Amino acid sequence: MVFAEMMFDKETLKKYSTQTIIAGVLMLLVGLAGIFMPTIMSLVVVTFLGWLFLVSAAVQGYITWKTYNRSFSAWLKPVLSLIAGVLLFVFPIEGVAAVAIMLSAYLLVDAFASFGFALDYKPNKGWWLLIVNAIVSILLAVLILIGWPVSSLLWVGLYAAVSLFFDGVSLVAMGVGARKLAKEDENK
Image (cartoon, rainbow, N blue to C red):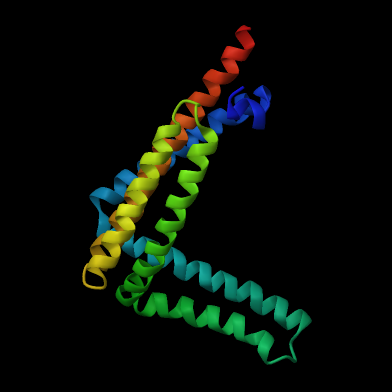
């Protein structure tokens, strides 16, 4: 019995295979766009993070206002989130350098997760693409650290794009493999 058969019933594989393929294609396309426009992708990454911090500050601030408005320490998190978001908008280039370090850490964690999932997913079709994804993520993390901070503006977008591209390829392969597995079971 293969891993997907043990973990998922055929109906679940069939149901989510199309969604997995669509998500993979979208990630693949965004990755390709970022590969050809890495500086823009870097600024998009920083802008996105800036908005996340600002929205987070608003939500945290609202909850603090409603529940702990008299506690000074409760206001630290929303205030720090607000400051981080504003700083990313005011100093986007420096934000990219900071994001480069965080991206390197993310890529190392992504590589670890991809290796683990590949071993769990083996021998299903496409499992080896998860290994490729993990190896590429490790290489990208090391390259970020070697060129930091000088090359951050160019490479952050490129690295995010390459990682998205390979994540997309992996998802497409997994979705196609799940669809085939579900169809094989129907034919039995």
